[in-house]
Image 1 (cartoon, rainbow, N blue to C red):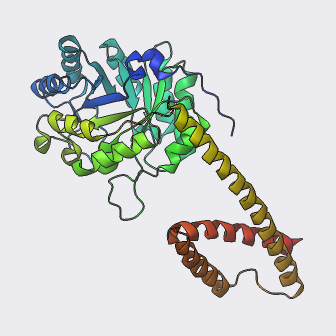
Image 2: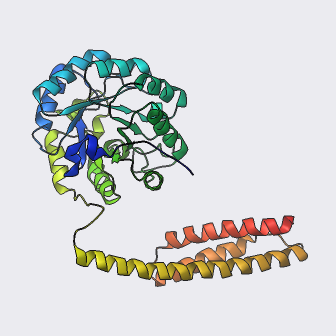
Image 3: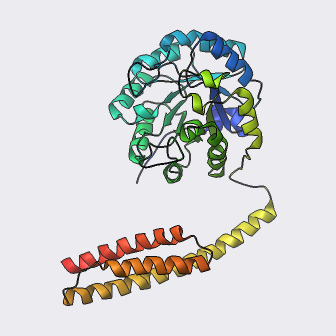
Length: 363
């Protein structure tokens, strides 16, 4: 996949992130001027907080619920900017929001998950952003669609926005989950692989959906080399008009940050670096052996396919497949490998084996 984004490293447009990860904190929704200002004053007491967030326009699932105060809240955010050292940020969902927010001096905009899912809406925002020099973060779409996420980033970048980042806020779960939104970590990892220069921050509030999950999710985000956090913070979370269960007080925010270990991508410890390189060299040798063994296995699969074709035997034998999964999982446990890990590997091997034998059958 060929993807090219013209973006500047976050530390260039946010110098503070050279020393600390980006921390965005503030209420899910701006509710009253008093609530906005009091929360901001308490958030800024933690020196790690850099940006104050508050939603003004809230896309809700059903009508009749609190949909935000709208542009009425912009002067409240302006007062936060005037009375604290925090930059201010809010979500935009259409062109009108973009113009109103920028004219009010909002420092950072973000595009929400419900908007990212719609290319028409993203393009409308991109057109409105043309000519502005403002940082924009794009949340992942509500569905686990990496192409849709990348497409939204490309649209905003093509509008001339070079101060660009992504927010991982999780995906709507397809089954029962402990999370409000399934993190599906492999998607932001793949995004980072494809776009290594793109800063990605995590929104553990939306992933967890509950206060007790914010800290472990945030820690995992840092362990996976994400550059910051967006944590919903409210002076009285239980009384919040939206997403009350996932918001924390400014004091709890500081406690969470105290417990989190921020791990950097590199180390200045020469002994560690040398040891790591040696271990990785050993892994490379093992991987070379694995590739050769997989090649031998697939050659045997091809022989079996030819034999099945000659004898009019079906490609799939369910009993054989079941025996392989159980036998390999059991043997894996003897090597300290989790059964689910081993089964997932053999599921992929089996799918590839079926595909190879199908080609043989159709030749």
